Image (cartoon, rainbow, N blue to C red; front, side, top):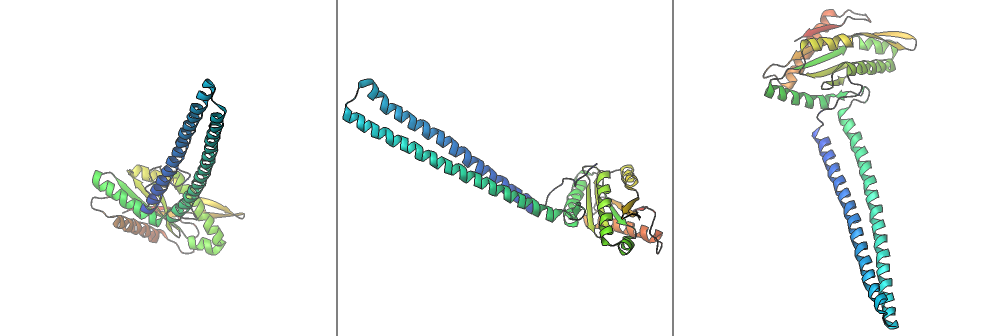
Length: 280
């Protein structure tokens, strides 16, 4: 069971952004290794040059004028080493700056990805992402013959809760229901807030027994709100995939089952309703 939204296929724009960031990260790492390797090579080369110039002088006892020229040559080589080290330091600073900018881009990309995929109130996936994921699951079931179920849920008398206790209480009810829903499903399932008090669960390779277990574990509950108990119940309807079904058809049939159930059991002015489930 899950405490956070489940991982799934990401929208194409988010995947493209992630790919571009990964490519930019590889370029920065490659540049860093190039600077380090080139630095080592040049330092070794200059060191070898200094040794080559000084060693013959030491061994043969060169003339004073030659030693002066040699000293100037050594000084020039040392100056080159210092200048190159300064250049290397500058490149390292530049690379660190690029890495920091990349991290900022990653954070920005993560925020945009969440805005595109996640419902801000409940933390569940939103309708836009659910439609993409459901289309992918339907295509997979069509190719491989795997079972697939879509489950729609609707809170009973949610408007009355808002009218009686206020919208903050209604928001708390939605958050608590979403948290409970997320905990009773499997890692491969997808919990979604469609909008308002409507929820959707995409259940790949789900048997009828597993579906009933999800509904049983979800059950009704009471929310403590400022010293008062708010009863929270829901109605449910679901649709199993049949060969040739389209994603929008499955959603429509599940909604039909849900609202048929709600109409059959609704009692005016009642704050509590039994959980009802109907299969389409």
